[in-house]
Image (cartoon, rainbow, N blue to C red; front, side):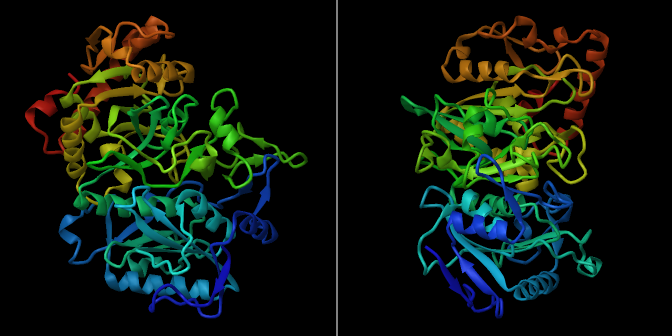
Length: 526
């Protein structure tokens, strides 16, 4: 479907004389992007673009309109910074006027939520054709010309706000959102991930009140057993996309899901994978998904052959690719599944002291979920140049409008109802901290996941780690025994003891923020 409109989806949104190209085809968007100088066609057929100065999310520049309707249900603070209704109205008008000055704009209509009982309708207005293509790959496409959105994104990413201070903002970059008006306005950042995460933020607000647990996780299912569903929780770079892309298990989704009384469903219609150091041998499904219809971000291309250099990090460590979930062979369409059998937490431990795999008790599951320990990896957020230890509640702190305990209580409820096994995988460092040790080899992490999902690890003999109390298996098929015990991989055992004690102390300092039961708090490090 391809049409042009000069009117907006609602009475209070108009872009003047700008021609709004609505729901263009993939080919048409790629043609326009190349003709407009927005990107280049890579040798594998993907559109390669640069996102400018911002090559990751800008969490310090995200603001939420503070209104009486939502005020008491929001966890105001570092993540949820308030902006006044007056400032939001003024900023929205500035964005609309900016877009009205363009000759051509692009509109995408689609859905967030594969389960039709819980989905949101989303319209995205952009000045770049490639931003519209990004939305087309990431959301579930609509085909109705009479589409009336629940949410509208206005992307004025090329506009820097010189007078940002008068609106209570931190910089010329701003992502302002209103849960009351159901609008998102973006300034000064061409990083497309801001659009994706703003709708996830909206779902994280809406779904709990509708009886659904929203989750920052990937999901897949056994090919021969629809009840064998697995969830992989983790922040960017911990392995959600990589580990869920398994040729033997149809993919449900790679990043955002809801867990209802019926089971799990993908919030998105596409995948957004990191592709730094991507190889066909290590991640064949992702490699093959990068083709015509995919969007590469900030990847270096050979100037003659246009072959992507996935090892190059000259633009950013956070090189990305987005593609429809249908580009993964055998992906489950529609993207829904049963209640999960296994829940896996992924932590990229920059200290190099967490065990690589452990099976959690219910209380440990609650403790490690609410603390959400991992490391921010280079490039995933503006200003992050090397891994930084980080506690992100529920493995998704930047995207949670409500208090974290709301989501932790939902996890407890779902675990109690379904009895899923919960595991913690360290996909970070071994043999020493960042700068000394090395990342866990992917082949060993995959071996852990295989043993979890085929049920063989459930029957192993477990012993608690002396510092963190995490139950560690004695053996795992295909993994050297010493790799299971982090202290044994360090040449300097005294240095390990210091680092382990340091991380345990950070856990204990962080858990004071939350109103846990005594049993859950006791499940933390010694």
